[in-house]
Length: 463
Image 1 (tube, rainbow, N blue to C red):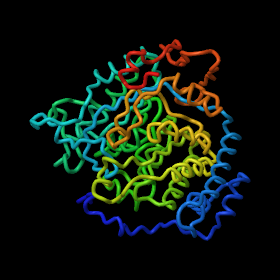
Image 2: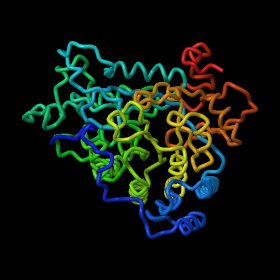
Image 3: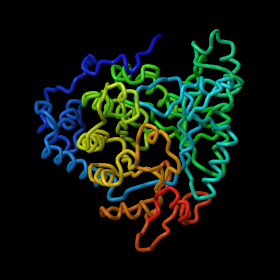
Image 4: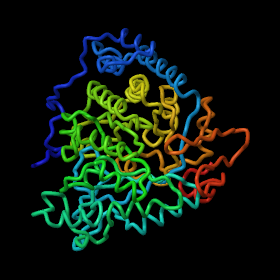
């Protein structure tokens, strides 16, 4: 199948069936939200648009939605703002999926042993991943998050390699080439999970898209795949690759990815295997408010069935270096008002998910702090390395110390709380105790800073 490129798309003729029009009124939707009633998709559209009959976002109505969400946040989780000490260890940028919103990937042929040219991508061996995680754990990090490109040489395990090698024209039929075709062998998913699961660290990895890659060409279920990965050391799974859970949008921005039902099936498989998960939305590109509301409904329905989602993570589209922007399909990302309303409506709509995250990587400090008054209660983690947003054009840094968190959170009158990935361990931090503030929850955490003053200065974040 030939996949459309960004250059093939006409931004004025995407032909979406689902548009942000409802028979509901903004006033009724807001009243339901204030009363704590379960919202419908039409309610969410009205709140996201502040009334679909009016052009643009009405400022006063927006503030009413934010106020309702902030009040709900206080009722559900109180004034605590949580964060985690984590490392991002992305294994490879090699990927042929061709998502038009992404600039993280490098086409996989560049990684082949006979390519002969320079490229900006990377692939880590399992030994290199283990070394990166070990070094981070020694500093006090206790979570490693790993989200990677779909390297054609990646397979679940040796048995999976044998199956894929038997497929005729496996490169086209199953996006597979054997490891010997590449300059660096990424190992198997099982080997990478085992390598990163060291010294008591919590391993948060294997998106639904990666899980599909780990079962391609087989009749294995998602539950079987995730159980195999869990046996190798996987502790929880990120519900990224969700983008927008409406296929007419996915057909535009990521036609090579699994469809909406595939994402849901993978998530259910992960939870059936006993893993906690998160769920995300990536919005602000070609999508509209109806798509966003439909996405929220599908996440809420999934949580009703499973109860395994620990947090919801809104991800605002970073556009600057992406194909969608470079080819004029979009002229930017979401506005500040759209970001605030998406977080607020997520809090109001997702009545079965306790935690809503905001992102200083996407928004910067000032705007991220504002969203803590729009319904968000989690402030991400220390992320010692972050490549995906940076490659798309993000410019807000890739490290946050505990001292930074305490200063930022207390500046808006909230309570800083160190947490574990699954939220089951928590430590309130008293700013009066003075720095350094941690971390303390990990196997090598003793309260000292993750980076020395010199290292922070080198990263441009010294105070």
